[in-house]
Amino acid sequence: MAHFDRAALRQALNGISGILVTPFDAQDRIVAAPLKPIVDRAVEAGVHVLVANGNTSEYYGLQAHEAERMVQIAAEQIAGRVPLLGGVGRSVHDACALAKASRAAGADAIMVHQPPDPFVAPRGVTAYVQRVADAADGLPVILYLRNDNIGLAAIEALCRIPQVIGIKWAAPTPLVLAEAIRRTADRGLAWVGGLAENWAPPLYAVGARGFTSGLINVMPKRSVAIHAALESADYPLAMRLIAEMLPFEELRAQENNGTNVTVVKSALRIMGQDCGATRPPSAWPLTDAAQQRLEQLLAGWGLAR
Image (cartoon, one colour):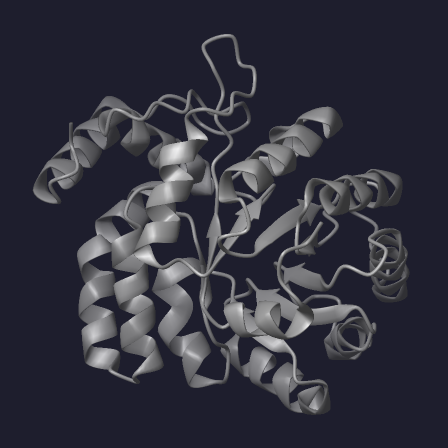
């Protein structure tokens, strides 16, 4: 059963959407226990929304039953303290099944991954999202747009699906975002910066509010401080806070962005909160040079165990 109504969820989306890692044991099986300190730390720091089965969760590395298990674990550990979004995607049947499972687990909304299929028709995406939204049986829907190649007409059609209340914009195209916001202003949607802390200032400047974050697994207080600076329009402070964590994000961007989750899980291991390895095709482990740089960073931040 969802814990937050549509209005409360809409307000929370103006904050930080923290994407939770998926913990694996030494046998590469999902385990619940390592997630608890991460969830507790994020909630206590003031992270506004938590997301299971996002990209930092290695969604595309999970089997269908594992994705269902992950949203159940997240719901149990969050226990209604903040809204939970359940990521869904892959084939339309997979996405519909996971939407139903996420609703049953107690997710407050579903986040629909943009289909990575090589043959995506703009009108086909609209049909896909509508079917998934219907399967969610009343849960609000957040779109996760990683590129705007489908065009503004299709984006507007997606935004006018009745169940859609927000969009996570993960394309580095602020001017296209500004036009999308203008075209759909009558709907009062939540527009969330989907490119983490680094891109939050330029996306804020054109009308997005809040941002997604994988950093919250490791250092949620820093994400909350950046959000507070942006909300008060103190861009110099926001940029300084971002600059201090930029080396962490630069490590995540190595190897064609293939160390994105590797760095987060490696940092958790250094902190004494091992969540296991990442799965291929993610890089694992870090190179010796990257590992050394990460250890130095965490030691400097007082996080190394």
